[in-house]
Image (spheres, rainbow over the protein chains, first blue to last red):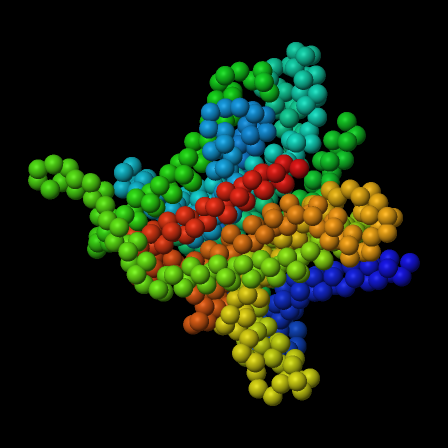
Amino acid sequence: MTSLGSRSWFCIGALALGFGFLYAPILLLVLYSFNASRLVTVWAGFSLRWYGALARDEAFRSAAATSVEVAAMAASLSLVLGALAGLSIARFSRFPGRVVFGFALLAPLVVPEVILGLSLLLFFVACESWLGWPSRGIVTISFAHATFGACFVAVLVRAQLAGFDRALEEAALDLGARPWTVLMRITLPGISPALISGWLLAFTLSLDDLVIASFVTGPSATTLPMAVFSSVRLGVSPEVNALATLFLAAVSLLVTLAAWLMAQAERRRQTI
Amino acid sequence: MTGLGRLGRLVLIGVPFVWLALFFVLPLLIVVRISLAESVIGIPPYTPLFAHDGVRLKLHVTLANFALIAGDDLYLRAYLGSFVNALLATVLCLLAGYPIAYAIARARGARRQLFLFLVMLPFWTSFLIRVYAWIAILQPNGFLNEFLSVLGLISAPLPLLNNQFSVELGLVYSYLPFMILPIYGSLSALDQILVEAAADLGAPPRLVFLGVILPLTLPGIAAGSFLVLIPAIGEFVIPDLLGGPDTLMIGKVLWDEFFNNRDWPVAAAVAVVLVAALAFPLLAAQRFLAGTRAA
């Protein structure tokens, strides 16, 4: 009995220390975004002045608009590519180049960002000089983000398909449904939780990316992380704290929504 | 799905295949090609692959960039520094992450879901912001120094920022969730009957852990280690924001070579050497990841 007791104390301690470590810096940042003082570690009372300053900051506003535009394009492209890739890896056990394909599908998840960024930039520069397209900016950032976003979507789709009952598809085919109908009415709804979370993951990863975007962008496009990075290099600023708080709030809302949607989809699937 | 027909199958496999070939494989080949060029002032800022010398087309390649990297010990120290920093971060993440993963796996029902959500949430939120948050904590007049001096433990601020310590802390902080999740995956798939059998047969808790739990969760440990080690080696944001003059990491060297020195061929050569050095761990990671992700 004593060993059980000590083990649960061990678990409580591990969780408290672990989550304290993971969340304390974020909580401090959020708290001090409401600080009236410009000094970042001296509390001088509650104030929204940094949020006001942020609202008037034209550079941050336009960077945020650019980031959302890029993220929406990248996530949608990731969704289509990743779903196709996940389906083909999960459902076709043999085709020429499958091993290379599987490797190329997982590699962008672990290859350092500086390498992805550099290689994509050199590719876009070569493309532009051969074909005259695309000029560097929103389009190139979206394509670059879609490439690694698709890999994340493919991983999620593949995992979901592994737990998917193929008898449903076969039954539909036996009952005379055309393959296209089966795909649209059975398979895609079945993997909808993976598709929803995949789109959102690709969206937030794109919104968050600094390194790849810095490489592949042109003079015309500055994303939010790039604007934040150049301001952060000059030191801590309460305005960035306010921006970070808004960003965290938006992402937390999206993730909670995704978790809820996925739970709903899962429940629907189980009642069928 | 098998009845989709040849055309459907071709589209399903072909579209993502061509995309990855164009946007992942081809760019890597272009990096190799530019690493063999010379830097010139112009657009693009490197020599063409083929040069016409008046008589015939000649292949124009040089190994000068690789000679430069091999000859200057800045690069060697940066590669080694990255590897050592990343390896230390991996070990620290493992030591910190295993107990957390274990505690999550022992929680039940809704509480376990909440803990998992809390581990994953930082993964979804901005990497840059989470690294930035440490600056306010570690700087000379930051939260930690203020806190310690209020307690009377220190009289002068400790140098906590812009050194090895802050880089290591930043790496562990940023990559910890990547270690926790795969280990949790292994632990939750662990057959509890084996653990109980070992305990019933009289094995003390320490032996149960070392003899049963640890070996059976090795795939999770391996997957987590690769997910921390490989990206950490090429990390740029953390050494740039939290590092100091003594921090040498190859991701930052590559960045500076490209953005500050504007020497594309040398930056490409740095990338080629890094990919070559990572090829073995990447291939090994591939095997583990393919195995654990599918499960």
